[in-house]
Amino acid sequence: VADADWWRGAVIYQIYPRSFQDSNGDGIGDLAGITRRLQHIADLGADAVWLSPFFKSPMKDFGYDVSDYRDVDPIFGTLADFDALVAEAHRLGLKVMIDQVMSHTSDQHPWFVESRSSKTNPKADWYVWADAKADGTPPSNWLSVFGGSSWEWDTRRCQYYLHNFLTSQPDLNFHNPDVQDALLDDVRFWLERGVDGFRLDTVNYYFHDRELRSNPPAISGYRGNDAPAVNPYGYQDHLYDKNQPENLDFLRRFRSLLDEYPGSTAVGEVGDGPRSIEIMAAYSSGGDKLHMCYTFDFLGDGYGRDFFGTTVARFEEGSQGGWPCWAFSNHDVVRHITRWKGFSADQPRLAKVMASLLLSLRGSVCLYQGEELALTEADIAYEDLVDPYGIRFWPEFKGRDGCRTPMVWEGGVVNGGFSNGKPWLPVPTEHLTKAVDQQVGDPASVLSHYRRFLAFRKAEATLVKGDITFYDTTHETIAFLRKAGNEAMLCVFNLSEDPVRFVLPEDLAIAPVDGLGFHSHVEENELVLEGIDALFARVG
Ligand code: TEU
Ligand code: CA
Image (cartoon, rainbow, N blue to C red; front, side, top):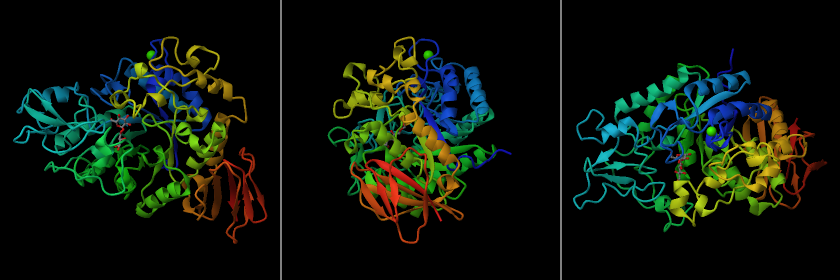
């Protein structure tokens, strides 16, 4: 009998299809290419893959603008290619999760084409339409994540429509039950096709305030990542344009659909500034909504004991049985080895310690393709930028192309073995020495460390499902206990370049775990931690 709870503590490997493996020389990765490379992910020891969108799309946001939820974009292949991918993944023991982008569609989706055609068509109310104010301005002050007002004027309906992201990504009106039904039918389509789960894009953006009330300025203490003059989005408190109470009811509907397919799961993406952690707990609590959520908390610049410890503790306190999923990198943010480079210039060492930390926190984990190679953020010239977010905010914000460059498989081959054609984004020369074939036979490589650590983790119930308690430490030392039943694992990390000593709480009898590739050791009741290093020890 399959373990319906497999997602609890699972390691989910994120594939960005455009950049994983090209199979036909057009310079763009595709489903057939992914199928060919799944063995790499199985060898790594992940439990599941999450595929970023491969659905039919005008690609204005590289697939996060869907024009047909039930078909594969020809760039990526066909439904038959998808079925082959699922079959191969399952043969290798990997679950398949897909990226369901329900909050908005492409403006080319037939639903929107119909909706915008008149004020009286059957889908007139499927998107969020509103009249201008008396002076012609938008109905509220809501802002788009990608810049400017989130209201766009439509000359045919002579009304505004809501778009939380690009103007070509109109928001669906979740207050309309027909919209919910249609979206859930599309979800069922993929469940019937054998997918094991979903990553729910922007799950907190599904509902907006029916009265379209304007947002107040940002609550004190919260500033967005960008300067307000560049993008004021983070300087507004998003009380009314997202995360409305109705969402919980929709998530219950969604969950009851998934419950018809035992073993299926969902992880919701919650980007809501300082409230994210509490929302994530609420959305994954109670066993009747999402299985788990992840936030952007560990995808920013934060670091150190106070940061990781406090974030996790806030989740634990408010979790009400909810389950977190953590990630350090994805296709939206600067790769973490580059983001945290100020803490150590030794990239492989930093990569290994941070991977071990990520994989030891209580929760499931998303790994982003290439982080197992310690790929750095690529420096993309302005002329080569394709991400609309980057093009709009250059040079203050360089966009997301730098983390989306192709995977590198073979160091000595053109384009790292990704494609025979011209890749849609350049393959950085400095990535070639980090290619899979350059690391795979070297026990000291980052890739070997990921494999080793994932195997270790898989066998430790404490790390997969145990609870977590943090110790009081200095800023750059992180120490916590993972406990499951009467087993416990002490996990200690030194995030600084200088050695530190960690004095054991007196009552602990510990047995350090050898063979993990770390350099620290134990002296009586003290852990002697080398710079940028970790130590794991069984307790009791
Ligand atoms: O990202 C959502 C996203 O960008 C927000 O969570 C945002 O970062 C946050 O609210 C800022 O405060 C997802 C996808 O991962 C991304 O690639 C898409 O572009 C976006 O949705 C739109 O679908
Ligand atoms: Ca291709």
